[in-house]
Length: 186
Image (cartoon, rainbow, N blue to C red; front, top):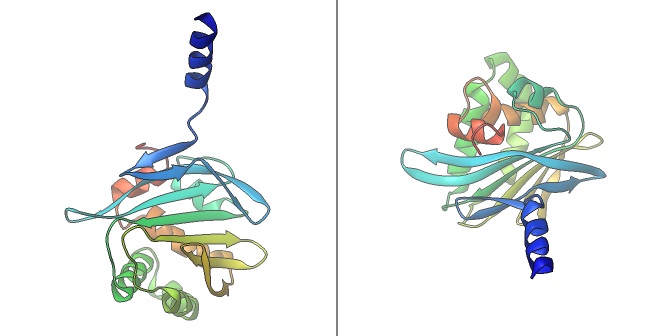
């Protein structure tokens, strides 16, 4: 009896292996290239009353400050697990608006060719699809859909930082999602 109780207490004391957000299991760790990353935070993107996706941010070191998350060097990951269907056009518009809202016209103009490259990779998304946006310092932004690489890496840490500002910028796509990704509202 005592061994059973001790085992139960030991299992209870172990850290959780994943976080559940809107029915989506979000891993507490991941590997991007050779880097081990930890879940910084996760939340739900809501538009009007519709739950659109669960967004999760993985970094080398946890932080609750957007500026620190944006400035961190090394590999990073954002996962978007779709909670509803979105057309490629809807995804493209959302990414474009998010970048434009958090950058000057001159900054957007400088990023324009790489934004176009990213948008060409986005296809219709179904409920349950997982879009992964990885940053690998040696090659750039890598886009995956359901585990399948899409296109070639998009160069530049500045480009990945522009993507992160969609969720972590001064005008994020969703304030509650920003808090979640920064681990402020888990």
